[in-house]
Length: 412
Image (tube, rainbow, N blue to C red; front, top):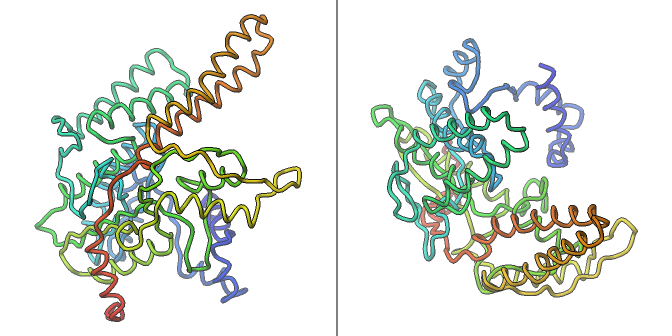
């Protein structure tokens, strides 16, 4: 109970809620207590880890069910990502089948389940066992077995938690690339979709909607412009550039960067639930901008330079950071050469100097080695996205937008 109360305080204390605080004032807390109930559960467990009495109450009350739970780290531990992103959605689906008043089940995935596909990416489902590179043999049950075997190996040698994490991160990337996905995140999310389509029981009418957003950025309008919690994906690159730490731009300047504001994703979710309530339908929506309002990577760079030139970042010494046009690295080969010249070669030189000086620069060497390893990993994980050559078909989403604009959403 204390944990739930702490979550309430933490969540409601966020800047995001300032609009409702201004609207309801002192009455907000009582309104929240009346309208919102927090339950501690676990998406990786049967019945979401809820007790019997809670389940019975929910089975008779839930009418709209949204699954937003996910691990979004590109190189998450494979056991963790498989549990949350792949097995978790099926647990929610099984829960939904027992809800007598359920009107729609909406699952949030990612547009990048397509991997590094080029051209127009359609709003189509995965079938169980589908792969992106034609390699046969993808079996999700076997993936679970492989995870358990790997964990058992690590337990046998009494591996430290740090070593287990490192091994399981690498194992996830290895399994993803075997079947054509660039990282653990997109791979496990794709398998999660496969299981949803496979286990959806045609005998039990159910509205199943999957939302596939692209790169989610700060809010456009609601509840106010510019809200963003934390730095993820492209935001970390933008802030890194503003701080003067990002001196190069890996990625094709003429490629399209598919960005979508967070509030537009939420609006699409709400509209989709209203549109498909009580319909035994299966629908996928790409929520992005690459077709309707494409932004070139070069333009994004120019926007960043102009913004931080006019509104410079103030560093910890109180001085304005001067940003310069970064070096464009338009091919993977250029990225590799840049990393070699600016990071790997200096590290090799420092290695020799450190040995020659009887480990005098040992601390400096390990600090630089750690930073280089992190940077190389970051570049490795983000390369598929900054060189992405696809655009996301949004035919279904555009149809939904027109439907909502006609005012039909009022029927619900």
